[in-house]
Amino acid sequence: MNEIKPGASSRSEPLPRLGEIGLSNFAPYLMNRIMGRYNADLRQEMSGLGLTTPKMRALAVLSVIDTLPISELAVYAVVEQSTLSRALEQLTADGLVRRDPDPNDSRVTRIAITEAGRAAYDQLWPTMSRIYSQMFQGISPEERQAFVATLQKMLANIRKHDF
Image 1 (spheres, rainbow, N blue to C red):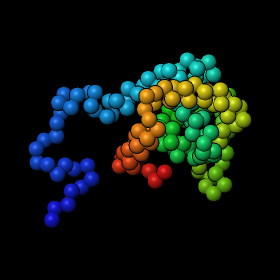
Image 2 (cartoon, rainbow, N blue to C red; image 1 turned 180 degrees about the horizontal axis):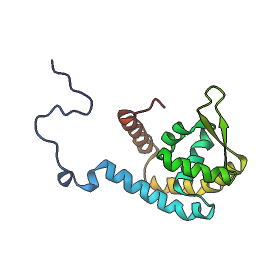
Image 3 (cartoon, one colour; image 1 turned 60 degrees about the vertical axis):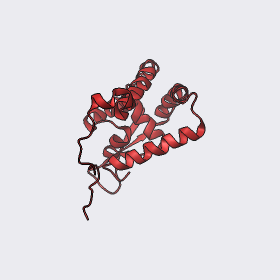
Image 4 (cartoon, rainbow, N blue to C red; image 1 turned 180 degrees about the vertical axis):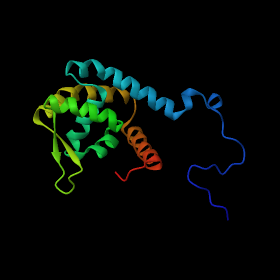
């Protein structure tokens, strides 16, 4: 019996090309459009707080999971580590996060949100929440739950980290 490797097609015919699928039916395109619009809608509020998208993502993650190693924070915030490092330098200088040495590994720096960082994030949250609600306008709670469950399965399919 032939085993099919994850990501491999069991069909012998070629997969349809993007032009055949269409942009409006291509999930990665739709996800990028949604996140692009979400980030653009937040940009004005963020800039008023001196935040950029990488800074906002770091604060958002740290508001939920406090004190993370930089490498894990980069994964959760979906920001390249070099970009995140620059953002963390500015967040630290602004007093919104602090750097703590890892008690078990001197090579690791852990990042924690400060009270000022939490206050800045709390100012941004109403806008984030409003935009999030707007995205799901006209979508039933059951559809939303099914959609989020599907996204979680998709993430599990492509995830490279255990967290």
